[in-house]
Amino acid sequence: MTGDSDLLLVVDMQNDFCPGGALAVPGGDEMLPLINRIGRRFAHVALTQDWHPRDHRSFASQHAGMRPFETIALSYGAQTLWPDHCVQGSEGASFHRDLDIPHAELILRKGFAREIDSYSAFFENDRRTPTGLASYLRERGFRRLYLAGLATDYCVAYSALDAIRLGFAVIVLEDACRAIDLAGSLARAMTEMRRAGIVIGSTADELEDGRF
Image 1 (cartoon, rainbow, N blue to C red):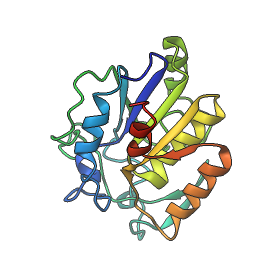
Image 2: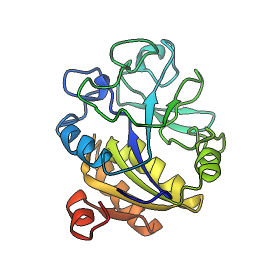
Image 3: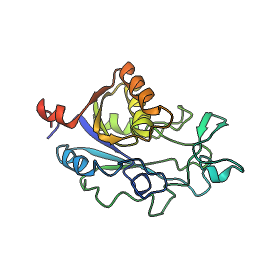
């Protein structure tokens, strides 16, 4: 298994982001067997869970005349409008039934404040309001984070960029993620992550190097 200072962060493996869900990511369930397999190689795993109230401001349904994937300006900047998804207590907000990492030590819920969206596991979309995850990781002594899950170009990328800015070493396991890719968002996210010093790796690379 990986070391005590390593943690696998599995991002938003929820029904609404998988095929058939309200905001399905193409192929969003394809990597579940891989995530489960690598999850067993980590002594420490945390999960994130999108957890929106029914009237969340990021939902297109809350803005007259607006449609999903259009953009509006909110107090903290540009906000993509989404289909209603991951509503608190709904089946869509539940983890996919095939996610099997029973030893995960933390479930971090995000996006529960009505007025602000939250892509990153570390900060709300104002990029200032913390979720508390960084303090948890530091108190537990974690220094290196591996990221997998959904979606590469949104919640995974935002989380990875915040993590490296906060001083953690970060590896994004590209083959254990899938992207929405809105108007080139995947290419932009990958470029930004590489420029920030994030390692874009794969589970095969880690196995070959003996880290898994």
